[in-house]
Every structure is written in structure tokens, then in C-alpha cells.
Amino acid sequence: MNISPPPVGGLAVTQILRPDRGAFSIERVYRDIRAQRPGGVDVRPWTCPHPSRGVLSRLRGAWAARRAGTGLYHVTGDAHYLALFLPRARTILTVHDCEFVHRARGIRRALLWLLWLRLPCARACRVVVPTRAVRRDLLALVPLDPARVATIENPVSPAFRPSPARPPGRPVRVLQIGTKENKNIPRLAAALAGLDVTLFIVGQPTAAQHAALAAAGLRYDWAANLSEPELYAAYRDCDILAFCSLSEGFGLPIVEAQSVGRVVVTSNRAPMTEVAGAGAAFADPEDVGDIRRVFRTLLADPARRAALVARGRQNARRFRADRIAAAYVDLYRSVAADAARQGAAA
Image (cartoon, rainbow, N blue to C red):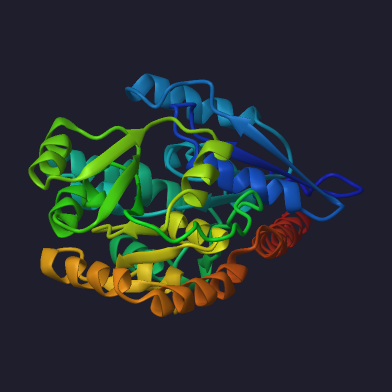
């Protein structure tokens, strides 16, 4: 495929989004990046119209991506196979995590490694990861020149603005974001058993999770498919975010809670430690007793909670959408310049 320079008068970038499947975390990240881009950079989204289901549908999606726009192509994550037919010199791929490979077994693992990591990474001139932890994981799985891998964090939406703390009272309201297996709800439920807290879960718990929550005797409620204003309200109306996840690529709820001004309890492993900085209390996510110890300490120490909130707000500034957008624009311009040089030399 011929390489052409970006359009005269500015840089055009097409952000290629996965097929609509009712999940919006990646879409929110890149919406905020587009909203903050400087002048002279035309960044437009393109959502794949073909479902990520079956070989033929995915091949149709990858082929359709060739006509998604002009200039640069940025495959923003999840549906990595959409990079397969794009021009390598003008294609950027974001890999948010590699957990989907680690969780798989046998032939499925081999196919995911090949079609979601190995080949898409080979088709991109630059690969973006959101944390150093994902960078280490990716480089251990795929033969890549480390110079081709850029670390650019995910932004926190300006919608998650500071809110005054809830008035003191009991019970303390704990917020849990997500219900996938890695979110570790059964251990969290066991850790909170007997404490004077209520738990609000964003996402629909499974039957096994409901059973674990009931066995712990917890007061809890849940809601799924929240809009961004509703999600903000969930943070505003809580006292503590519980994010004792077993594994993550980034962990955006940590920064969202810090931005709102809420205490964060998260896992003492990467990338949660990397993202939370000094603005969280850390627990071993596989040790119910350690999670319980952290919560008991915080419940008994308002001064400790206030200090964590202050440090969390400071940490969240690292993830302002304008700063992240500027990092992406620098990357886009660098890739466009390299593509133009290759085109001139051809």
C-alpha cells in the first residue's frame, strides 16, 4: 500500500474504535482526548460496523478500517485485529492490557496471541500502552523493539470534578466499580463482613457474587449501565472506593475517585500502585485479612482518610485530559513526520 503524507494544512488522525458492544471505557478515554486536542490536528472517531464475532465478521471489520479515513490511523484498543490491513507507517495501536491472553488456554490462547497481539503489533509503527506494567507484560509476550512502545496514561474526564465529602455518619458507603472476575468481589465481601459499611456496586453481580455478598451479611445495592453523570453521582455519594482488583491494565476508577475527592483502597500490585501514587491505601488483594485490616484502620482514623484524599487529588492532576491529549498529539506528529520522510524517500 502506498504511503501518503498527511493532508495539507493540518494533521488528520482517525481514531478507530471497537464495534459497539455496550462498554464505553475506551470510548470515553478517546472522547476526552479528542475534546482537548489543539488546533491544526483533526482527530475523528470511526466505530467499526462489524461485530467482533467470528472470523468473517472480524475480517470485514479489518478490511473496512482501510477506508475509515486519511492521514494517520489509531486503533484505540480491544479490537486490535482492526490494524491488520492498515498501512504500517501510518498506524498506531493502543494495547490497554494483555490479560485476555493470560486468561486463555490452549489453542484459544495461541490464536489470541497471534491475532490480537503479534500480528497487530507488527502492523503498527508505534504501540501505546497506558502503564509501565503493561509495557513490561507486552514486551515479554511479543518480540517488539522497545523504542516502538510509548507509555501514555489514560486521562480522567473533566466530568469527575471535586465534590465535598459526605457529612459524617454511619454506615460508611463503599463503592465498587466492576463485576468481572478480576474485580475480586468475593474477597472484598468477606473482608467487609461485620464492618459498619454499605456497599454499592457498579455493574451486575453474578449469582456467585450475590451468594458471597449474602454470606458476608453485607448491606449492598447495585446498578448497571450507568451514564457518566450517574457514575459521577456514585463517586460523589460514596466515602471510600474499593478497587482491590487482581489485575488491571490501568485502573481508571482510582483516578476518578481521587479527582472527586474520595478515599481509595486498592491493590498493592502494579499497575494500581503506579496509577494511585501516594494517594491510596494498599492491600494484598488475595489476602482477605489484609483488606479487612486496611478498611478497619481507615474507618477508625478520619485524619488518615483526609490525608489520602488530599494526596489523591494531587496525584489525579497527572492524568488531566489536556496533558494526555498533548502527549498523543506529540506522538501523532512524530509518526506523521516519519511517514512523510518514508514517502519522500520511496
